[in-house]
Image 1 (cartoon, helix red, strand yellow):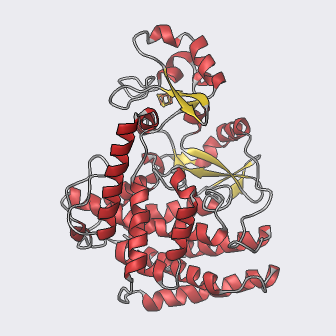
Image 2: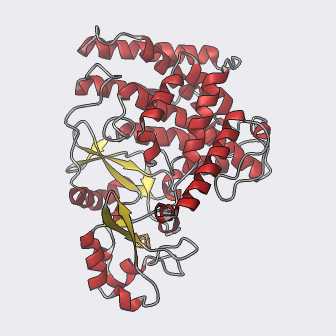
Amino acid sequence: MTKTTSIHLPLFQRFDCHSCGYCCRNLVVNVTDTERETILKAGWQSRIPDRPLFKRYRFKGRDLYRLAKYPDDRCIFLSDDGLCRLHAETGIKTKPLACRLYPFVPTPGTDTVHIDLRVDCPSVAANKGRNLTVHSQEIDGLVRETGTRAMTEPPMWQGTRQLSMEEFQAVVAAFEGLLRKGSLPIRTRLLAGCYLLDLLYTIRVQKVRDDRLVELIELLSEAAIEEAQQQNNSVNQLSKRPAKLFRQWLFLHTITDNPDDLDAGFLKKITRSWSRYRQARRFITYRGPVPPVMPGWSTADFEDIARIKTGPDDTLEPLCRSLRVKLDAHAFAGPGYYKYDLIPGLTALWLSSAVVGWLARLTAITKQRDTLTLDDILTGLRQAHHTYGVSPVFARFSERWRLRGLANVGTPAALLREYGP
Ligand code: SF4
């Protein structure tokens, strides 16, 4: 990896905006008072006289604003030809910071600010565009606007043990090393990560520090690779409880709140909660039709999902790359991921592969395929990353607790085999 003046970029990732309009239809853009005034001063209310430009909402007793949308979810400033009217007609300076940043996410890293990328962006998921170095000056300026700084101390190991920066970096490097191991199939690399997690959960880090911990991580990493090679074709040993816990976790990755529901009346809120509850129950029982949680989901049965066969190993490249982006940006623990401790954060990151796999299988069914393709993996990946690191639900204590139930020895590997791609 290479540093620019003040930021660290994942140089294995490419990006250019292809004006697909995904972000301008699917994201909620909250605006500051200054951004709202800039847009109003540029005369936009007289350019779009028949509609409000902003939607006001109450949050924690304060009046806040977000950009208004058309009934079809298009941003009020998105033109029919898919371009941002703010950018085209009154200049980039009138665009809110959130719009100018997407898909980049400045994240506190150990040494400087690291750049994470939103993998729900089609160009990021498909690795389309130029090397990120061409955007470095622009990103550098945006990072300064956000005021993001390097982390002051790395995440805890798990609850009690504060890590040094070197120890934290050694663990990150071990998982990155597994993903970069080109001599192994990607599936084996993912499995090796599961076994490395098993080993990290069992060691007593209070007694091992500094260089000895770094050495130990290297040894464990080699042991995990050996284990993955030996167990590559072994049969699944997934018991019922972690399977249920995982499916609840999976369900939470599929739902996104409609911001308009914040202003909804009591009856509408109750109806929505009841519907969510029933959908969640269906994921737990895992029989019969998959509830239509997301628009466009097919009417598949849960039983059909397990029948979809895995595809060629190289279809997993986007998944492998997305995990590397999160590790490289430190966007899986600490300030980059709901202040999770290191090991639970790595568990959530690694198990996101199983979420991607499940969503990819559902996509394959929708497209009437019986084997996963690259297209299915890309769709599953983008859907999973619409909520990964974004949905506030995962900041809750209940979700930290749930991850503990998914972290027993052998469970991550079994989940990956059962639901993964
Ligand atoms: S303001 Fe422009 S860039 Fe931002 S969401 Fe609207 S159309 Fe897209």
